Length: 493
Image: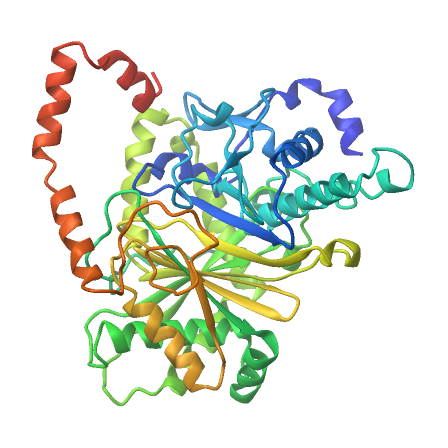
């Protein structure tokens, strides 16, 4: 059916609108807040970059949602078909870096590798976590077929695109929009994490590995799901570590993205999720973990009611449909959208995203060790948490731009108190003993011999930007830098 529509209207292949949620990401993204997330798969053998490049080139023509570049229109950004060829690169820097829309052959995703790991980093305007997982699964499937010497025809060829019908580009927000009474998102300020920042661009990553069976046993004891339990542990850890377990004026709130595909029967590859805000204010020292768990469970149950989700969709889409907002040029609309986003962004302390278990066909699963998920951080949200599961292993990943790991240590200590065994792995900044899975970039030993203080001193030196600004202006005046090229790159002129 979709192929018939493309035949009748071939011009639609050249451009399409961003989905309802995606419209905000190009406006707020920059080098300090990349709006990029990562899904990665670790294989049981070292990655061959040539085969990976071939696999990417073979699957991309059939996945329209990723075969685009972003253009700036008069009223909105929009996607245009990209005929370039993306290049696979060896990972050599920190994860989830900003994706310059004018670099990377103008693709809004990047594929990299390191040792046995394949990384897919995606700009959030393109898709959400589930869409990225489907793309990475297709890429991994084709890479393994090439590794085994599978041909593009015959019996093996029939297995190349088992999920192809699911790669749609429908804006499911518009498809499931109902004009009903709706509620707006809260903009009341929440508690914000504070600490010493790492130098610009640096990021510490810490993975905690645990058995799904142990986590389920603890959750069954409390009578809640894994998402509810981990969210409650995170809220509790923030209060204990940063609030010292004392009464506070501001609530500790988590932003929990909720996948809407299964609820509304959608198979789109575009964004289709809602935001759930859970947490509360600690008004007494006597607040127990069990009471926090009950609060989070009740709040999440209320959010997941279809009526409430429809109200959120109605609120988002109704703003887009207002004629006076649509008529405002993007040059005026963009700063207003950034201001509104900052007001809404202050309503939560940090983000935790759980994409749940990832599954592959048995013949491919035998070659896979695990999956990871990671979310890019920013100064407004310096720590973020992502969760995924593969077979009998649950992986909780913290990404942070702080020079310390105090929240992470408190979080995993609470899990261990409940009887969950955790082992750690990360990059050079996290202080974990196992660090071989990431390239070594900068020698900052966070947990050894005053490493946290050393990183803080580096931040203070990097924060003195007055001399840097003067130097840059002098380079423009002397002709060593082109002001015209800089404006073209930064302002898209």
